[in-house]
Image (cartoon, rainbow, N blue to C red; front, side, top):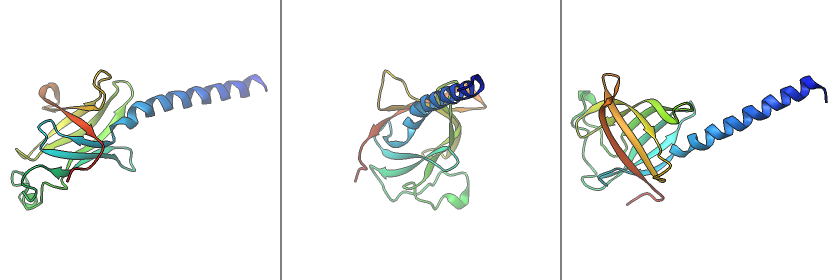
Length: 152
């Protein structure tokens, strides 16, 4: 094998290893999560465009409630159950976070810029922070616990 071919093969192997490493931490966000207060279960999945989104798939109470606080009057008739509350999150290898997305809070009808991360010291927990005015420290954090099964 000549040097040029060996160099190309080595570069390809290194790129594949770094890509697999990014995927192994990046693939960890999809799943089923119970919100901090235990009031809802959210299913997070990755779309064809590579972004992650999450929708409410279970509510502990008032399963027929409407999204009455939505600022869009036309959407106030939609049920909270089935509502997409996470949108547009992409893995960022440099920060090891999922960024660029938004989180919607049906309790107050507000949408916040947000980022998501995992802490290796708390496996099975998803950390989320919504913030305002583009200022990451100006916001609120919460945690969701990973679950294996959809609640009934």
